[in-house]
Figure (tube, rainbow, N blue to C red):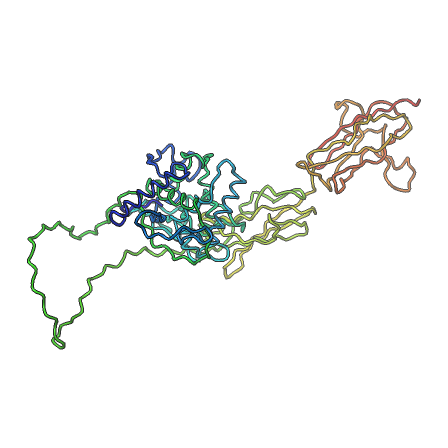
Length: 575
């Protein structure tokens, strides 16, 4: 978070030596050009926090960050001996849950974006300078901070000026934005890059799993390969546009690559307030009207040291204790405002939810929570519950999920997976935390299963003499997305003529099927029947007989979903 008050000065000449040693050590390591001086990214090169081609603030809004550097060994320093990662120094320890989140983000991105090759050590370096690893791993059992980690109000006084974009949903401030969470995302950047890293159906910037995956996704934007120095530097500068920030992150990145170990959550002291500014000079504090500006004082002549005074005697009305100097209270941040609660729900669907059995619904149930003034209500809790006998579930197998609305008041349920039984279903959306029940019933339907491909299992020519029965039964297989399609309805129809121009109406003579029953065969003849594929998607037609009509006919088989096979039937004169 490259901040906006003055660059923090390190302690004396020793600090200069430490910084020089750090740069030398890092340059000697295998890290890609770790701290080389590189001009700041131009507007065309800077990664955008929003849609492609749109110039947005950096991930953190260039807020303050922790400037402490990792410890280095060198002559004349009282350093502890080298230790293994399992029992390493306190600085190389990373809280267990935080370390797990960094590693899981790396694994997730390796599967979804293998080109990027984001290392968990880079996420750890950013997490270190942004929040001290979520304040030393102070997290609940789900990986969420007990209270939000908030950056300063970005109101243009010493910092960037970013007006509120989330209605206070993430940062509790309805006037200006603030960086939020262990990886310090400003709300508008989180809206674009927020991810669900722990699979709970929410994107929460205060959750380390969600935040770490979101940070990794952002670093991988623009098809970057983070093993390439330029891509690595541009990714970090997009997170915070400061050369000081770039150098600080690269120092920690190199440090963690050389060894890091797991420590218990909360076992490390919480870091102090972030102070890094990336070398930017803060704007002067505003002067209230009527307040005289301080004028510089001329230096006076040095005075001679006076004689030491005798200590005061008891009871003479004086005190031997020195009077403490007056203290100036630190500036306070205005308390975050609490948004008005939600009072109603609005269905955002464009029609009935529908999907074939066994498939994913194309549309997700969605509602908008609104306040009494009909404005969107952020941070409202909405519970979605499935009702019906279709066997439909939300993705993951649950039938009840709770979702928190975003800044626009919208709550979207996870994707629906249609069960195997066609029929009606209802998705109930209930607004939680209200005195009066607020529920919407969203109608849905599971339709018959479908197939997108139908093939005959052999290529034997279908020829038969008049008045006889075709040899063997016709067998076909139906599939959907390359998988067997069980329970799919199909219609088989005997058509007259070999040319489609002869029509699609069932023939009144020629080959025919016999329906089951006790009636005479003449009464059970049919040239159109309906069948269903078995558990493996197979379709076996009944025997096909012929009357005394000769010629060429067509057998058209079509499934639900539009898969079609047309076979040619030839009926010849008896031998």
